[in-house]
Image (tube, rainbow, N blue to C red; front, side, top):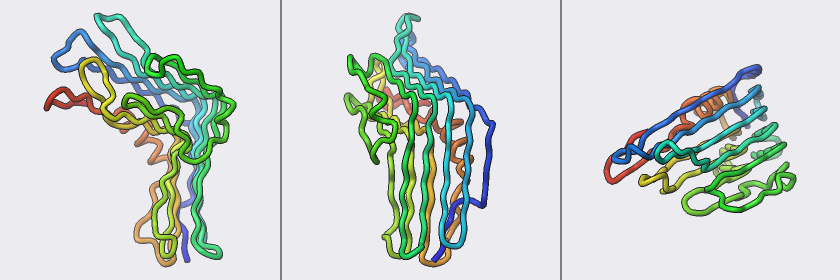
Amino acid sequence: MSGAAAPNYNVSGQLASLSQSATLIGTPRVGIKETLGTGLLTTNATGSALAAESTATIDGLSFGLDSSLFIIPLSLLKISATTIQSYSQANSVGGLDASGHTTIAGLSLSGSALGNLVFDASLFVNPNPNTVLFNLAGLSIILNEQVASGDGVTFSGISTNAIAVRFNNFALGTGLANGAVIIGHTQAAAWAGQPSAPVPEPTTWAMLLLGFSTIGYAIRRRRLAFA
């Protein structure tokens, strides 16, 4: 039996800030802007012959998606939180097992895409796995998103996303948005034999998801696409 995360790893004190704007093809009067900011980021991974675990903590989250028509701004979606933590573990003690959990403090959501819905953030401090907070018109917000992998006999793994914002043909002006924003990602895995490949460090994932793939939606109009 063996477990794997990254090699023992700890990074703290990082900040993330990202902003991207675009004008929809064929509609120069309609624009979009996506922003993401955080305070302190802390990630940690530990692994041994029998177990592995990883955590990612984000303080001061601020995410926004805005559109504009004739330079008049409109807030489509805003998500903020005081602290978010994602945790994943896997072990092979007495059989393969993998699990994860998420903790969210001070969650706040607003924006025209949510209509008049009001969310009681106190209900989602420790959300159940795959809690669908919102799902309408091509926009879904999932808390404590967990994706299991493996057969439970030779391999067992899990990926945990504290907050997943997914776009599926979500209308932006005259275009459609497809993709996802993943905030607070961790993963861990355990094998009945030697692992075939190392698991990425949590910070690698944090940088990828918070620094690059966060803006990985595509605005599609007819056959044209750009990001």
